[in-house]
Image 1 (tube, rainbow over the protein chains, first blue to last red):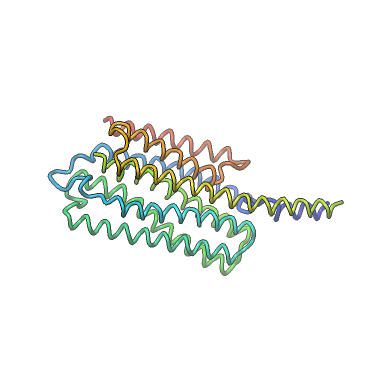
Image 2 (image 1 turned 90 degrees about the horizontal axis):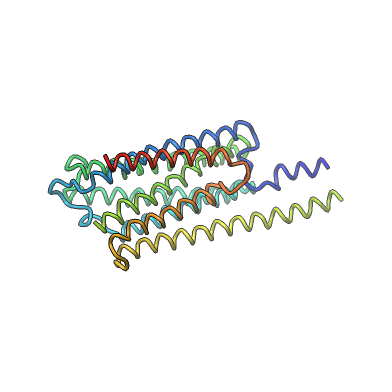
Amino acid sequence: MEVNTEIKSTRNMPNHLETTTLEGRNKVLGFWLFLAAETVLFACLFGTYLALRHQSMGGPESSELYDLSLIAVSTAILLTSSLTSVLAMAKMNQYKLKAMLTWLGITVLLGLSFLVLEIYEFVHYVHLGHTFMNSAFGSSFYALVGTHGAHVTFGIVWITTLMFQAAKQGITRETAPKLFVSSLYWHFIDVVWIFIFTLVYLLGKVG
Amino acid sequence: MVQQQNQSSRGRAVSDKANREMKYVISFIFMILLTAAAFYLVSTGAVAEHLILPLILILATIQVFLQLFTFMHLDQKGTAFYTIFIIAGIFFAAVCVVGIVLM
C-alpha cells in the first residue's frame, strides 16, 4: 500500500509537483493575486490609450503607422512561446530535466526575437515622428506597449536564471514552484498581448 | 494486487500525460485560428465597420479563456482561489477601463 501512495505522490499527479509543499502552494496562490493586480495595472494603461488614441496632434495617426504583417509575426512568435512554456511545465512534471530545459530555451529565444521585432518597430516609429513626447497618442501608446515589452524583458531574465538553477539543482520541490510560477507569468504576458494586438493594432487599423 | 494497481495507475498516468500535451497543442491551434480570424476580419473588411470591434473583442476573450483554462491550468482541481483572484482582477480591470474611457 505504501508503495502505491509513493507512486501516487510523484508519478500519478502530472501537474502538481509545484504544489507538493506548503511553500509551493503559497507561491502559486500569491502569484495569482499578483496577476490579478497586474490585470488592473494593464487595464488602466489600456483605458488611457483608448481614451487618447485619436489625439495625435498632427503627427502620424495609428492607421498610417501600424504594419499588420509585422504584428502578425510577433503575435505568432509570442503565442508559440506560450505553447513551448506550457510544454516545458509538462516535461517538468515528468522529471525530464533536459527536455524541460530545451523547451524553456526555445521559449526564451522566441521571447528575445519578439523583443527584437518590438525594438525595430519602435525605432521605425520614432523615425516617422511618432515619439513618446510627440502627442498624447504617442505617450499612451509607448506607456502601454512599452510596459508590456518591459514585462517580456523581465520574463526572459527570470526564466534564464531559473534555467541555470534547474540545471544545477535539478527538478526538485524547491525549483518546481519557481519554474511553474515563471511559466504562469509568461502566459499572462501572452494574455496581455492578445488584448494589445486586438485593441491597439487591429482597432488602430479600423480607425 | 498492489503491483497490478501500480501498473494500471502508471498506464493511466502515461496516457494522461499524452492527453494533456495533446490538449495543449489543440488549444494552441485554436488560438492561432482565432488570431488569424481577427486579422482576417480587419485586413479584408469582410464585415461592417461597427461590427469589427465587438467581433474581435469576442475572439480575444475566447483566446484568454483558452489560455487561463488550459495553459494556466485553471481547469484542474484545487484552483478555486486562483479563479476567484483572477475574476476579481478582471472585474476591477473592467471597471477601470470603462471608467477611464468614459471620463
